[in-house]
Amino acid sequence: MKVLLATDCSQQAAAAAKFLRSLKFTEPMSLTIITALGDPYGSSPESTQHWFPELLRQERARAEVHQADMAKLLRERCTRIDTICRPGHPVKVVLGEAKDLDCDLIVIGARGHSFFGRLLIGSVSDSIATHAKCSVLVVRPPEEEDGQRDADASKANRILIGYDSSKASRDAVEELMALDWQADTEVELLSVAPIYDYLLGNGLSTAAIANEEEIFKEMKQGGDQMKDRLIKKLPKTQSVIIHDQRVGDAIADLAEKSDSDLVVVGDSGHSLLDDFLLGSTTKYVLRHAPCSVWISRHHRTNPDPDTTAADAVSNGTSE
Image (cartoon, rainbow, N blue to C red; front, side, top):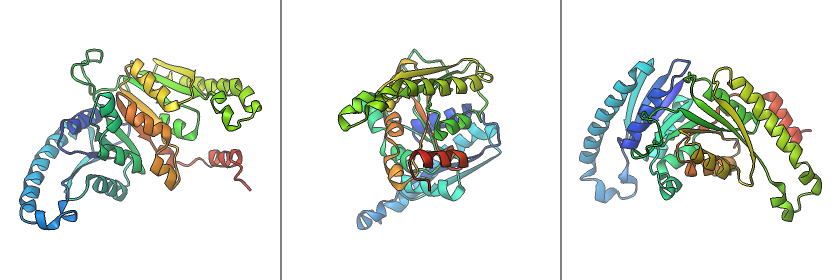
């Protein structure tokens, strides 16, 4: 299990490290802690050439101390820990290293708890989560004054999984279940059935509208089947299905109501356009959920030929 922990020496980064420490992977974890030191030369070389080398030296020294503290914190969870301090834009540095190392997971802290803070999330976290080819865990710890959460805010005791029976969501569950969770961890599988009459003005057929309840039943069945699998390992698992026009909004809203510690969603994008847009649901959850978000891309490295063929038929692309 190759994990890349991106840190900018902030409190959010420290919180991300503590959250990572609480996760018990069932396979050995090899960790790389990376810090991007910035690179102002590209934008204004003449004005920075005198003072930047000294600033870079100071920042590197500060980052190395911070990384050493993180390594000490995570030592017992890892078979190997490497550290990297490198000049450059944080997004390019982190994504480049994740690609070179063929990482399974990137962990990064997020900024902001308020509505606007969550919406803006931070350009670095947002960009890394959007463009990474592997799974990404964006850690947003609860505010200290939030008395509704457990005393140990670094643990995920309440998990909400966006589930629609697709390969992306099934593999997201499998990726999550590759960790050793406490038996009392509460898990909600949320399926959001579409409300088709919202699209009637765009020419959707009445036959599709009449089929709405059938789709609802199929989604409920899929959620219940996955619940039956999870409940053997996590007894406090329940399946929830609702009608809603906006899937992302429904997931973020339930995360707020359930006081979730972690939301898990599978990113189904494959094309360049999908990668750019990230997927409206995933992007919305990333920016609006009040807690940490795990974006699973496990399905991209674990292709399912049967599902791929079925998708091709359903999309009318098979020959």
